[in-house]
Length: 275
Image (tube, rainbow, N blue to C red):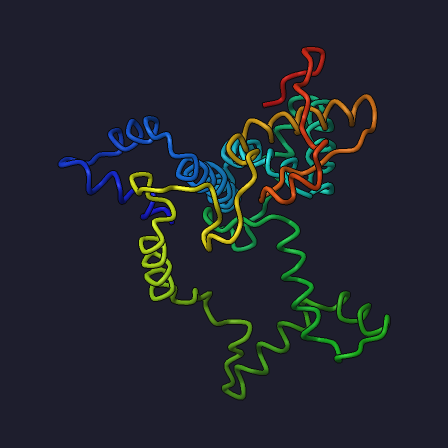
């Protein structure tokens, strides 16, 4: 998708450049192209930045990525993540700056002590849980869990030593991480995008519809980020002051018709700007 978003500019400019592409994007008026550009280069990039911030323990990058992606929680049905974000932000604001800084520096850990292999504590707990499951029977009792948890390190060392003695390689635990090959699938998808002219802003007879052409997309998607920011600000105000119902931004027009009162009012100035 990223390559196809850049392709119309590349073939139209004799000397393509990053600066030229950014200027070219700002001049595009095709709504579907702008929507996909926003989804890929804003929200998807935020996910990549967040993962990089976690792995290298770069708190400023991690926080910036979270803030960039946060409107998504209010745009669709993610009530738990909305509450987590507000509770976390409120808690950090109430802490002393030095405590806040300490938490941000320690919120990820590198078990290998390598600078580029930090993980969130939830991911570490998941790995430990997986290791514990390898030491207990398929249907464990509470007693099995307690014995495995209390002696996990010793059991794993004993298991490793035993495998070394008998010359057995524990592939499940020691094989390096691999990624499935996606080149063929990527080529097929790019071919389909070009065939359907889905994100080509220069194509004729453009319609604001999904890639299959079966559904007309919601009009609110044309202002997705603006409405999502409004919803986020409104939710923060509701959370701190009152509780009211809310509606997600619809994807197709049929959903919007079913919820005619889903339009979001513009928040008043008394609600702080959390963008």
